[in-house]
Length: 275
Image (cartoon, one colour):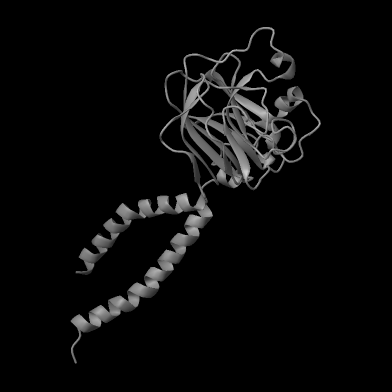
């Protein structure tokens, strides 16, 4: 009987333990769904998707799937964007609305995701507390952005993750451990770049920050055109906490011992012992 119970509980733990851990990780992330699985359309003459709001964190994960259109957004050769360093097509822009809501005050880009001019090369721009707020876009981009080396494939879904974290939750992905933290860009699960200007600074967190899909909308104006793409499954939250899961599992183990030992003793006493 004891052997059967042991095997039963072992199999129960193996089957459901992982499910319970995944549930705990999900709770620890305080994840919010910004766009569901049903895709939204950016650019291409489509109406601008409705903006929303989110509370941002200094350590966060932003994940989404994107399907770039075959028709890429390209600016005319005589466009002033080349002097303004705005020749990009916007995908997702989280901002607190300070300044012009685009650049280069802390909170303008938390982050900004965009394609390069006439390409699907993905760019990530992220503010950091302590950055030079009087810098122009050229100097800002030199410190506060990174990008993929290859273009994303058109007419295909690609999974993107932006992760801002300290060393404890980076899983060894940060290039310079002495920096204490960084913002990392992943494409289909592979790290492709790291924002250098965020390594030595605290990242901004804001209550009720604006989330725009494509270009900024009223009351703000944007020099960036919206990207031609589809977005789906956009989620924002904190990185999963190993400490939270470990503490809950420890409490679960203590309660199991505290409850099961008396119950087991009572069961044995009632079924095996006679007086």
